[in-house]
Amino acid sequence: MELLSGIIEAFSFPELVSQNGGDIDGLIIAVHLLMLVLFVGWIIYYFAALWKFRATNNSKADYKGVKSKTITNSIEGAVIVAELVLVVAATYFWNFYVNEADDFNEESVVRVTAEQFAWSGRYPGADGQLGAQDKTLVSGTNPFGIDKSKPYWEDDVEVLKADIVVPMIKNDDGTHKSVTVDLTSKDVIHSFKVLPLRVCQDVIPGLRIPIHFRPTKVGRYQITCAQLCGDGHARMKGVIRVVDEAEWNEWYEAEQEKKNPAAEKAAAAVTTPGDDNA
Image (tube, rainbow, N blue to C red):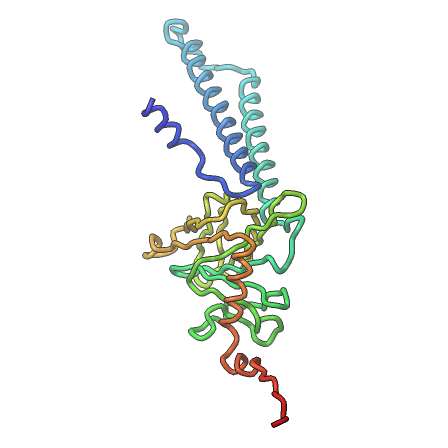
């Protein structure tokens, strides 16, 4: 029984912490079932051909062969149907993950930038919008390539080579609020893969590729780079940290405080004048 349970565990899906991740599991199961049907079908055809055209039953070779195209057309039709099923299913799930969620809000966008060999994130500030980025502007003093000639960048919250923090917020209807991640790269092609969230998307330099998910459980989940991105590919790891709403608000306020220069903090400390009566 221990061996059986070990085998079942080895072939089971990893932990699921995304509201829509079950659909991805369903797609994987459906694809494997389709491949199983094709596999069994080809095995049956293989042995049927071996039996029908065995040497003992066909001692004299027939060089004219079968003139009917029924079998050929049937096989070609089965291949076309299988390919269409895969294309339609893949297109549906691709559209689901790259199109905006029905509760999309610019304030819930996290722009994740990949580089050899780390992940960094930017969050909208008080204005609720992210500033523009341009890979040609990336430098040692401007690691995100922020275009400072355009608005909205000054109050953005930046997390450089650290945990990507996202909130787990429950909507009034019982669903979980979606989080949108805009992916881009500073150097080569990487891949943003978080198994428990059921997301996996190539990150391409010069492009902003959005994905979204609805986290349902707080915790720390590993970001794995699923593309060979250089000699240090094995070090290309990160963490996406899902926190509840209260912890998110606390973390976000603390990060905003870090952006306030000491001069602004001093100016904000207003001293109330006392009575002049002596």
